Length: 112
Image (tube, rainbow, N blue to C red; front, side):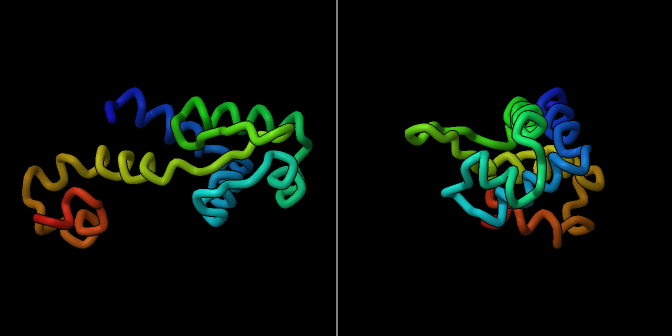
């Protein structure tokens, strides 16, 4: 992930409804939820939700798949890992022990 992608993803989350949508999709897991169900659970008007989902998708945080007449959205959990990895890639100027607790949560660092 580069700086531009990180900014896009973090910007997408920097709004109350979009954060709620993303958290709901994280809870739903890989199967995700149809847009109508997201709107119902979060009490968001479908046309407004559509805009929020577009921003989250553009930020690389959700995937969308058409299933018959519905579009199902799922959180891209790998994107969260990529954001954290980007933010911590230069942690403590190479003194990884200062960030060990956080860095140990990242998949590619756990084997170190």
